[in-house]
Image (cartoon, rainbow, N blue to C red; front, side):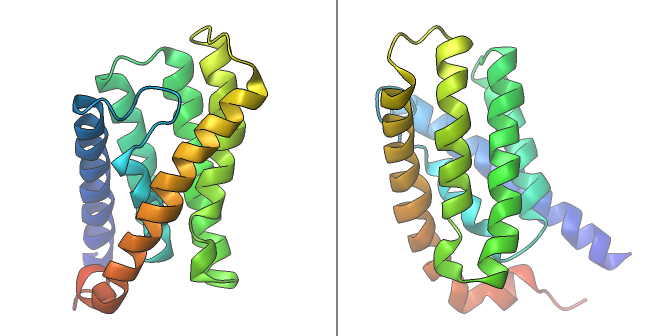
Length: 165
């Protein structure tokens, strides 16, 4: 029972943190433009530490997309991209290498979000250009910031993610 409570608490905290960071990036104008820097995307490395990050990131993305006024297709497919990335991070980084933790969310968002931008928002840029710009933002957010976060959390992972029950 205590493990379930810890799991739900971790997921809820991650969802809340994802939402706050998304709103913060939006307030500073970093979530818009050709290359988007979203602090919340750095959290996509958290499934490396805990499976609770998978639903946490997914729910955080849904809530963030709703609060920022995204169209339904962005809410659905943007959140699915985050879910795919989180699941991929959980399995890939555990089985292969922690250094690959940001790769699944980078790929999922680079392949899915340009279609959302083009078809849901009517972006007139070509799909290849959108893939390049979304990919660049994801490399910065997930790759650079995410790996910095991963290395900062690694020494305290047991304190944060494996509390004594």
